[in-house]
Length: 274
Image: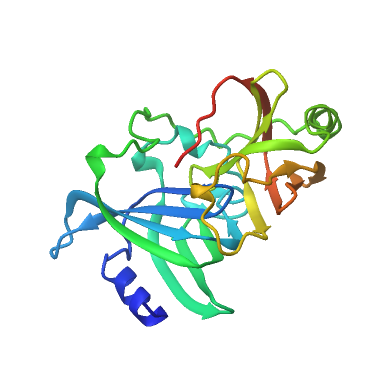
């Protein structure tokens, strides 16, 4: 199917101003998945939704609302001090504005605007599937309404965190999972540990995220652990205003982002999304 046919197929799901229930990046950045509510011909929600999957992705970049400041309902400059993962559906402000497709060098170029999230990337394939929202375990379903704090998080101690990261990211340590959750707000990396556990490094309240990979024609979801070639070559931190800048080298994938918090923990299981 050509670009015109794909664009018409996307327009047919009536995503304009549709509530966006989730945005995820899985399989080492290879898959970007967006979930929209479905509306009948009269504009009413019918309990169903659309899952739009962009596959074999590369050259991805996105901006969130993490650097916005709300002042009496208007964005003025700088401060969202809340985790998206703790928000209820009513607190989320992600609605489909436009998804524009074009093509270049055998890739589909995608520009996506979800109000509080703007994404640009290229991919090879697009899949559209109708779903039952009641069967989906969206992260916000069990969240309880808590008034937004609008408070600033304590500044990251970059030198201290850099030393800690250097202790767990050495000797080309294998990376088991790289994924992005909660509308781009959280980037998680799982590094293999020697005792059968993993180091989970979470970058929270993220903005200005971008990554590139040299995998261009393979579905990462179908690969075995031995076929994956992601190893941690280095994670470099620096200060940029109220944010921490992160540069990550995972051998065949490079990642750049800014975040407000960084958490490091040892885990026995991995919560990876398929």
